[in-house]
Image 1 (cartoon, rainbow, N blue to C red):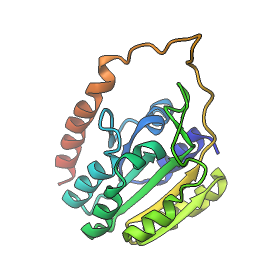
Image 2 (cartoon, helix red, strand yellow):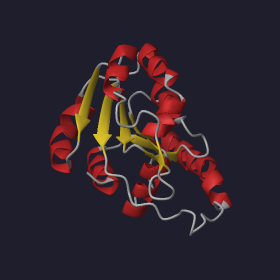
Image 3 (cartoon, helix red, strand yellow):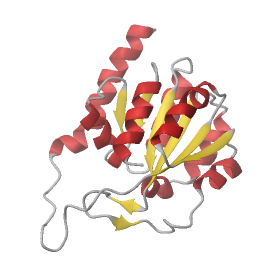
Length: 198
């Protein structure tokens, strides 16, 4: 499954839920034109679950969809325990498991990328359920029930990494300032939306 396919299915099914996305998923949602009710977890790598948990606890009726990265989640694995211990229920946590950090740019290998079992970790941390998908049609079919379930729910997405664009022969350009400002700008927009729905 490609990351764009997975994010497209998530965007179609999410309803009014807020999306918190990091790294590759953030850019996939950009490409799909999904701009409303979104919060990017950059430059807070590894912080998607924590950001989403705060939103879910503050606005439990709205619900939150986290679209994390495997390298990002590994940076803050303790967040799984914090989420499970919080008692949050309208919370679904996807992880893009592609085994590549900075996928589509430099594709650095993720430690344990071929062997780590994120679903087992989520269940051990106390998530209500955990699931794995590697095909967009199966994900699309399962999403209504997954989103309706009492969470927190964890979903590992087996994603084919995008081809690297940068390497020794082609240097990666410096990230534009907006990449490090967008989280704040999106948070302001999200605050206005939350105020409008009470």
